Length: 224
Image 1 (cartoon, rainbow, N blue to C red):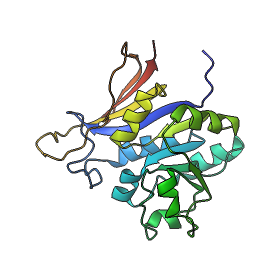
Image 2: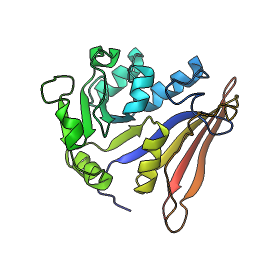
Image 3: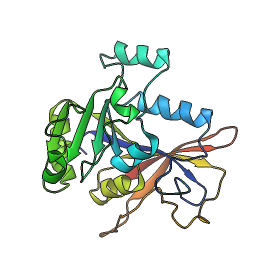
Image 4: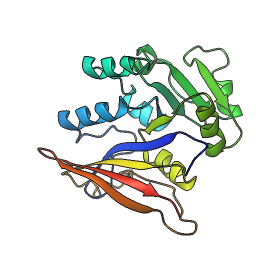
């Protein structure tokens, strides 16, 4: 089926009980070098990466492709060395002193009229898309019209939930980490805010790889 949007793949790690961190404002503590290599490899195949502002605040940075071989593959395909990075924020409340703004990346912001006011006299983002609501199909159609065909979602859970709500996910790359985090009262889930409307999407397992500690699972999302 032809879609008027890019191909979208969510790339994230979670605990065995579906959590992405011990506390909402903290970055995950269970990531491994092997998982980072996996994340970098998958991200290097995308033209753009989308991240929620809460995830950016927790990490302070976005993913940057560092492996020279991966960068070489991108340039051989006519792509920039780094994917475009898009941050989603209703409020626009993103501290200017984050290391993110010193990374060698092209940065865009998706926000609301209120959120855009904060950035009227700031220069951290090369482009700012403003809309009163989160009409994801319209935003994604605009991306597609600009020639962006492959997009990776890096989380957090509310962002993934919003894309599921819009029926705008094609693949899931899930890293299952050998840890349990449900004992923490504020542990955020890997997917939040999604409310099923109609039939559930079907998931087809495309790949299952066992690492030294984690499982790396790839699913196709088939919408009814």
